[in-house]
Image (cartoon, rainbow, N blue to C red):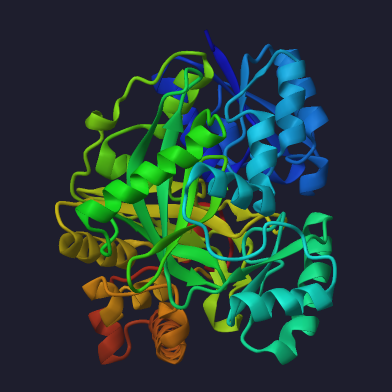
Length: 508
């Protein structure tokens, strides 16, 4: 049995995994970079080991060093979280060779689904609907032009090893194909070390809907219903919800069946996600499969009542799934907002720095997966996401209201965050009504920018008022009780003055 797990990650996801380990009576081991010595996951773990410098390549991406620590501390298994080494087939294979369980799918599955072209071919063979496009890599711009003529415009050029919007180019006319092809190849090589690209027909204003799946070593696979992930900025998810407002019972059954078929086709083990694009007529197409735990997994946990990390550990330990498809029932509605240390008014530039003040939201139906605390310094070296705010309520309407309230309560000073920006998104009529798709932020960009400007002006005005009040109080203190205002506040004594008196400072 698994008794000790090394979590090969940092921040909120490391904490998230360790909490499930503690409930299961499993010893958790943290690894950390020099920049993360004061990170909360280091304090929370039962054991913690430094694995290198601040740069990811020297620490969280250093698989050999992580395996060395795992062997040294006697870890039975490694949980990779998401990002970093979570979809690294070579690392998963090395874990097996070292006799350490990799909590995730087999290396072969990661390789197969990590290559978007091979993933498309596999899904076609499994009978899962796929967006029309190429089943092989494009070798030249001339070939790209011919393919575009055959499948029609608009098209999307994509990196075969891509993700997160990198190596992607939308092309609406033939005159732009050659330039887009070269640009996509160049970005793909820079981002993934592989310049292979392919073409898909572009689905206009789709919904981005994903299905959570779980599989065991005995060929059993179930799905845990869908998540709506259409609120995206530059192909990066910002807000997710479950159930999807678009979904019908019949569509959920069909998409869930195909998600399970996709997972079975690759012998999937553990928790994974099958992503689809859904057009205006509710036709859906396979997009990709993420062979790891997703950032947005908490909303599935909230509506299905399942701890996905515990299920990952359970099946990784060689045991059969404890759940059947009939056990999975959606209850209520959940929404997640990704909280990032970034400046929305400056092109969403990362905003590392020291947390001066922190007030976290609470109350019924509020969950916060985060790793920051007051006086903690957010490092400049990693992703700016500092937490995930999740709410659950009995209906979607109540969940939207609860998320607005929770965002309003959430106060962080010392660094810039996207909290106000998220609040503005939740005021959009499309979001409130549940009638939106992946173009919602683009269509409302001007209005959202105006809300940001207003918020910035209010912040400046508030700071000016606070400064004026402080100045007024100091002036009263210096002037004594000679004036009417001073007399009214004659009992006021500065904390600084009291501190000075207690410590023998002269002139106070």
